[in-house]
Image (cartoon, rainbow, N blue to C red; front, side, top):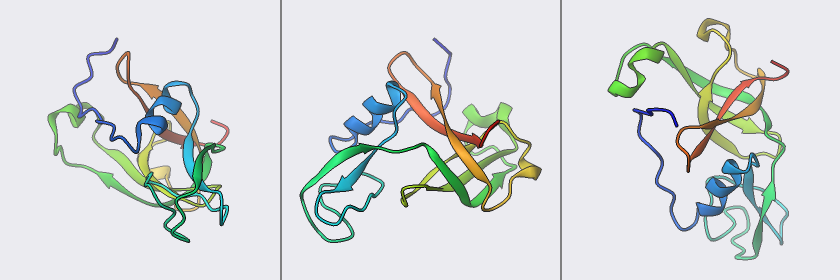
Length: 137
C-alpha cells in the first residue's frame, strides 16, 4: 500500500461502523428512528431530539461546498507536496455537514455551493478516508 505520511484517523467506539462503511465504499451516517434526521459526527444520542434510538443509514455521498479554506502553508510535513490544498465543510444532501478535502479541481476554482460527490481514498490496507470532488468529474 501507499507510504502514507499524513496523520491516520483512529476510530472511536462510536465511529467504527462509519470507518468500516468507508472501507466498503459506503458513507454511513446516523439517522434517528424518532425524528428521522441524520447527523454527523456519530454520537450515542440524536442531537436534534435527544433520542437514543437510531441506526446507521447509507448516505448518497452527494452534497455541496458550504465553506472552505485553502492552505498555502505546511502545518504537517505529510502535506508538503499538496500545498495549496482545500479543506471544506461539505453539506451532505441528507443535511449533516462534514469536514473533508476537495480534490480533482484547482483550488482557485472551488466555490461555495458547488455540487460535490464523495471520493473514497484508500490510505492504508485497513483505512479509507472520504474526500470530495466536483460532481460529475
